[in-house]
Amino acid sequence: MIALFAFFHHVLAFTVVSALAIEFILIGQEFSHATARRLAITDAALGAAAGLLFVVGLCRVFFFEKGAEYYFHSHALATRF
Image: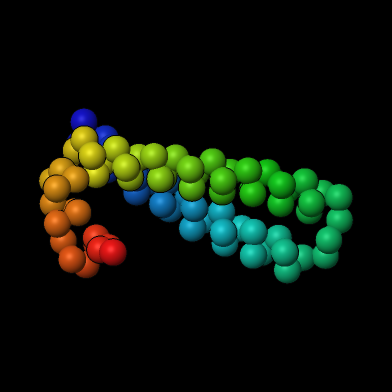
């Protein structure tokens, strides 16, 4: 199960980066109705992948890997007020 969530986490991270690259390419093209449709689809995929990436990342922190105590104890990852 740990490996499955790690796999999903990495696939979603690569999907976010790929969607951003596609959006930069589409923005550089001549703007037309077809380009706007492709941009909307890419933007929806980017939003879905980013949301899922956040959820899977939280699941990995709280339920898998080293546990939340490890990550929140680290001074580099935790913020203190």
